[in-house]
Length: 208
Length: 208
DNA sequence: TATCTATGCAAGTACTCACTAACATTTCAA
DNA sequence: TTGAAATGTTAGTGAGTACTTGCATAGATA
Image (cartoon, rainbow over all chains, first blue to last red):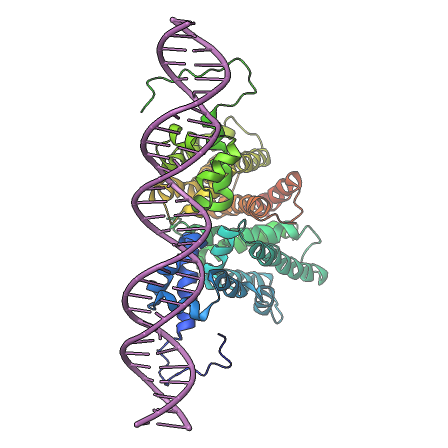
């Protein structure tokens, strides 16, 4: 039933992907597009290029596949904070880094994030794991903004809304591009610069 | 088969909801939570308080129910523009009105919007109808900002990103609250004010 | 009273889905 | 060469699902 310790072939070709990984990748891709129910084991097996039965040799059941995929949203806070590691002489540089880091994280984990959005109401463990994500992104930036305030580089004003606006912008752009194939015609670089402009201007004192 | 012209009982009680409407409401509610496949005709009938067969007396098939619900995302541009009707002496007042109008629209149509997000990849007509929504919201605000610029009340700067940031903020807040039951602890009124502060400051010239 | 309309109810059909069982084939290593 | 591990193949099971049919019933109407 359970393999004591799988010592798979791994013939040295880096190209050859493990069956288990291929199944996970296929499931992830399909669930993100079609939802949990729409991603039938038959379709998953076809996309993974394995026999349907093989799926159940690697996973107890379909639900287990989802649970495995859900691990992909762990460590998000860690990743976001890592992107902000180090010191910044400029607020703009910090925001730029955060924007790219956050957007990159969204794209990197887009499939599991989509699954979470879609299945939020269907699987309790999804909402449990996922619900912290949107707050986290805001919190991390918010506390960084407060650092700038504490160091006197920024006036002491509401930093939560500022962080929320910044994060929201890239989330919206991400959703528009990756959920709906939208012609929002967004150049990421340009958007980052423009958003930085407005935000910095927005939270800086006028009487400079 | 098809009823020539339905002259339903309508006994005068305003309380009594039409069977057809109850089915639509139940379907909308369930599909928004569980997705199209998750909203089985059995569950819909139970929630609507009718017999399952009755559903198929009112609708050719399940797909037709979805098509009917999809009509709920028409006229969104109209609604958004209506909220901006009239003249504004102040930029702030315009933004405030737009924020409330936009957020209200999201809440008002939350079920159909959720269905669209969830089913975007499954039903071609969904994406066709839905894909314009996110752009529309930005466009309407964007063109209003440009009016302010043309009237000399605002410096001629990028108004698209400003509109995008503003709209994104309330979309994010909406999603956090209504898709995930998030403890973002957002007071709508306060958020509108804060977001207006930052945006106005952000797009106004410093050397006032 | 008789008719019509909307609905309920019971049963069933055709299909799909997750999942299993049994056996065959390949691959690789001891 | 033998044996074990991973996978393929074929067939099947039981549950659920959209949808149909036929008949019964209640209420309003003519």
